[in-house]
Image 1: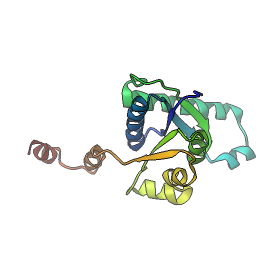
Image 2: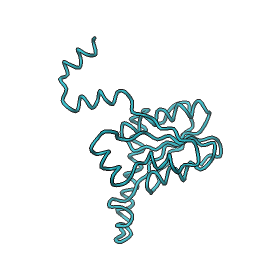
Image 3: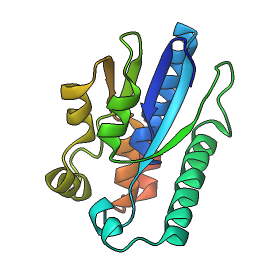
Image 4: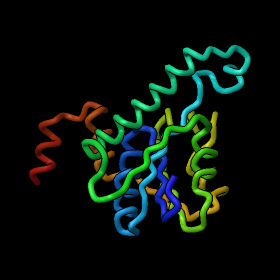
Length: 175
């Protein structure tokens, strides 16, 4: 990993994390820093269950799936690696909050996280079961943390998923 200034960003592949990834790339360019997109992963069922019944071939599959997920996130966000910034993508086995705060260990690091899935049933359940990655990073990071809110486009996408009449949406857009 680079010895210079770094902008470390948590990436999951969600729209929220892609918004944070864009902001992190902008910050890295402005700071002349290395962009470190990080995808943290754990074995299906959790570390405790895996340790009880390890399966190395399955573990390799999960690692490869995580590698592909980070690559896909970079493709979806930028069409590959972002232009105009040095990038050091990283896939790490571990809980996201812990991984991110462990990596962002220098005072001049900037850790970028999204607000997560605010207001969704899935997001609420995840926070109840596992806690908020954002909150974890805010309370434990040794570096500066930048929390990126959802893009205003997220509300438009949610409306489309709820089945809003496309003609109604087109009328609103034309107004």
